[in-house]
Image (cartoon, rainbow, N blue to C red):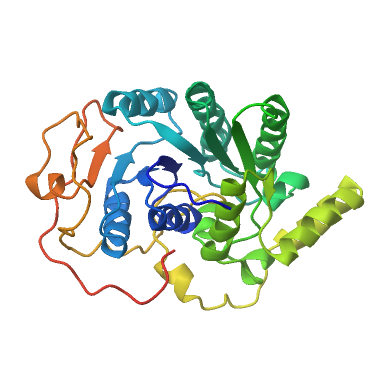
Length: 352
């Protein structure tokens, strides 16, 4: 597997969880990273973490709510205005909803369909032709082990992930003789804030043996760069996928229903879950209920300059010196996040 350097990657849902860990892997290999998520403060904190670890990485963050109709177009237009040539697209943003369909939140489920499906298709539609015109490119679509089986108590979420699998496999066939590869990531239940956002924190599956965002991202990254069609992290997840193809759907649905039921056992303590700020697919870029405010800090002075960044607004001098800029596309204008004053000690705990 060759390391591709000095190229650009756009990652949605990049402020925490699997998306953030993917950004770390791309930063390690010197990609220009464009991190996209809903909340500018979470993005700013995630960008500071990356800039602290990889002082020379060229990094931009864009805050935008991709569940809105015009969001993919506005994001794409902004990327084009900056002159950024995207080489890798990572469609990672997404979230879930837990409960009986007759009792679950319709508004939340419609937003989920919009983010998990419509936004993913829209962004793929916008960026894929440019990748083909460039003569090379890679796309990572984040599905789930839930892509392969009916998922009672998460009926709409599982259906959105099944769509991603079917859509992406069709693209793989269409693109088989092209210079662009599509990889589908199918992670198992992962230790992010997904279950809290979905309201499934007391389910049996949330109490079980969860994969870590780091191991999921590592598997995805290796498969993406190799041009593999599918990435299924962990042996347990591979068994789940194999089982879903052998057993009848009705039996798979029954087994999944039992796994998803709520348990009366006390919730396991998890430092990772306690510190999670947002969820990325399979989760949502929303704040956790008790998320602490990001600590104030200053930027690294060793990072890449903004020589090739033609920002739409005047940058704060402290930000312009680093090449780290957060554009807020949720409003009618672009807003640059100011750089805070002091830098805390970096935590030795793993990022979420």
